Image (cartoon, rainbow, N blue to C red; front, side, top):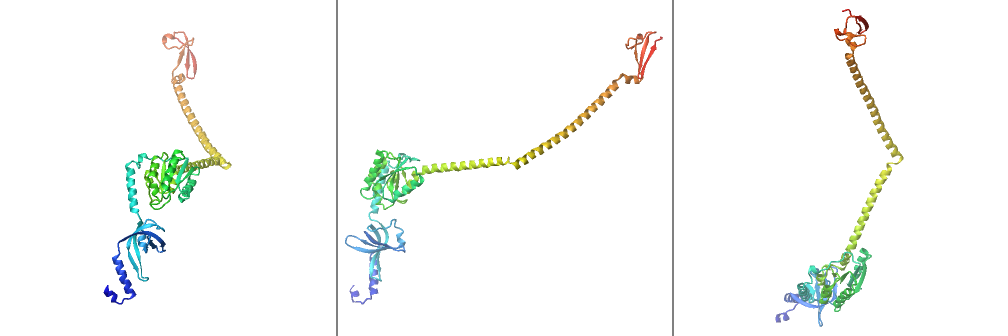
Length: 398
C-alpha cells in the first residue's frame, strides 16, 4: 500500500486496480433489498437500484440472466439477488451485477405452503373420493372474486358468449392483502348458507406467490372443504397455484378456463342441436331432391317418352304373342291332321268293305241274319250275298 502511495498512477491505472480489487474480492454475494428506479431496456437488460433504510447501490441484470426470473420486478418489491461487484471504468462507478433474483422470503413461503399442503393432504382434504361432480348445465353460477378485476370480466364475457341463458351471481371479495382470506371464506360460507347457486368459481387473476397467498390460507381451505356447493378453483395463470386448487372439486388453470369448464355442458348441448339441425337439413334436402326427381318423371316430355316406351314394349310383346299364337295354331292343326289321317287309315283297315274288296262276301238269310255255317244255309232257302260293289240273291240248292 505504501508503494502505491508513492507511485504515480493514471486514472485508468487506478480504476483498473480498483476494478481488480473489488471484482476479485466481492463475488458470490447474496444481497437483500428493495427495488427502486426499475428501468428495463429495449435490449432486454434490467437496470435498477437496490436499497434499504439507509443505503442504496446500483444494480444490473443482463438479458442472459433475466429469463431465469419467473416474475417481473416492480417498484417496491423486496428481493434477494446473488451476484458480484462490477466496476464501470468509464464513469468510475461500481454496481451490483445480478445473476439471479427471487422475492425476499420466497423460499420460506414455499416451505410453509408445502408443510400446510402435507398437513391437509394427511387429513384427506385432497382425496378424489370427497370431490363433488360439477353440474353439466347449472342454472346459476356464483363467482367469488374481486368485482373490479380483469378476471371477473373474462368470466362474464366467456359465459355471456357460450351460455347466454346462464344466471351469474357475483359475490364480491377482497383477493389480496390481510383481509382477503376472511373475505373469500365468508363469501363461500354465505353462498352455502343461502344456497345461492349450483356451482362456485373462486379465483383471481395472476400475481406473485404473496399475492395468491389468501387462497392458501386455512380459513379458505376449510370453507372450500365444507362447501356443499361444488367449487372450481381458478387462481392466477397456468403456472400459478394455490392450496385451493387441491381442495376444490375441480381446478381450472385460469379464470377464463373455469368459465369454459362450467359452460361446457351448454356448448355440448348447442353442438348437439347444431348437429341435429344439420342432419335435419341434409335429410330434408335429400327428400326434396328425391321428390323433385319423382316429379320430373311426370312432366309432359318425360311422360311422352315413358308412355312411348311402355307402348313400344307392349307392341313388341303383342307381336311376339300373335306370332307365337299363329305358330302354335299351325302346329296344332298339323297335329290334328296327322291324327285324323291316322284314324282314317285305321278305320279303312277295319272297314268290312275293305275285307270284301279282298274277295270276301257277307251272307245273310231272309231275316237279315248272318249265315256263318252251312247248317244255317238250308237247301231251298234264299240268301242275300253282299259283295264289295253290290248285292245278289242266291238260292241254296244243296
